[in-house]
View 1 (cartoon, rainbow, N blue to C red):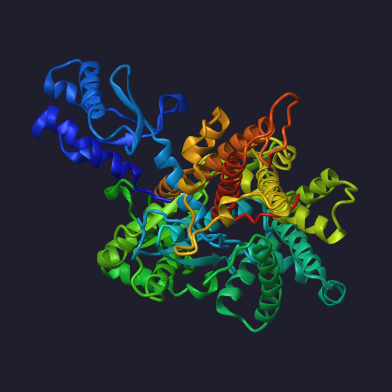
View 2 (cartoon, rainbow, N blue to C red; view 1 turned 180 degrees about the horizontal axis):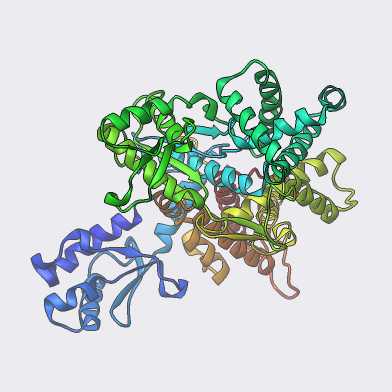
Length: 616
């Protein structure tokens, strides 16, 4: 598929505009965007509104003049790019692409080999030659893996795939907290229970071990807040973890491994992997970098602590080394940045997918790192702050032990999918398991991704698993419906464009099937006017780090296909009494629409990190 239709329109229109405006206009001034209403056409430009002041004319008059000149050129007509060019108040020029252009775009799509990755479509190579690290997930060991982590991973995975599709070399990184007060609280409770050996013998599965850690963390947090003696002991344990004291390190390592194995099981379930795992315990030496920053006058000593005075930069003042001499997250971030920017060669950008509560943290650490080495760090980091996730029931808190666990949410979604599938005899138990698992993951992921990353989400479980409406299962079902139609067409040995290829070029063209003679119904036309936009949407999604644009596109496509499917026969058998059977060319064309819909839904879901199912 071509992603240069805008460029072609610009190059075709610009000579016409130049005739009217002369040197007062440059090609970059001519911008084409999609109108909000499809009835207005495929593209619209406001160039007449831009020129009205320069030419001192009414924008409607200028727009009409441009349209009349354009219609006298080869922009329109049999071989033109536009089928219709019109004017809309207060001076917009609307362009409807020709069926020939749209058909060639469709043919090019269908000539692509369907793959399991997003490399088989032609996207704008906006990130080619760029090396980008996406740092996401960030769970803390010894703590619950909650619903917020699911949104983090889902967002990060989709961002990775988008940037790869646009030509970028992407490194997946995960910075995990494995030291700190939360671990000291957990280990304190384990030690206080005096039942560790007994418990260890009974904790056979990773899930049992993680549930146990969750209970211990909640108990340790409660003791820390209510018992001054316990608080002092927990602080001592925290210091010992940093010092890797022999009496606490074995327990820390064992329980840390429990969490890491559990995280790995969730990453695998979500279709995510990492090129590099960073740990907080590996970057404690950031304290030394902070001390060097004091010598350089970047950080300051203040009552036994090391701080950054952010006021001169319009930023907050934050602590890098506390009065106990321990590095804070800020100091550790300095070492982390040093590692991230040195281990993979020249990094052009690091995207940190982290919640909005860390906004001040990143503004300060980015500034300190830039002051330390502007060439290495300056302007190369970005904080992608995703919104909070809540159930419609209310807030979550791991400290209180009532956190909404990520795995619990996936399992609840899976149960509901199983309930919907029911006792359907068409599927084996293994197929039901596959469908339920993929649909559950799709339900949760899509519910996060259909919303702009920065927006908060009130997660609705019932809505997420619905096979109707804007949901992951609905998209999986639409894809499976397309594949079912295509399987039936092969069984019936109907003429499918995908199989009608030239022996010489190994490709097919619509001209050979005489598609130009078809009079398209509104539903066919709507689909045809949707396919070509996909690469543009991917480009915009990558530019703005906004996977929700992909979700919006494929949901719109699925709706259009299902309307088309319900109103018209695809395989040639009339669905409505009194409607005549269709010809082979119509059947072939409708199969091409079905094939393209399946390809783009699958491609869109891949970019969202969602797997498809062939039957549903």
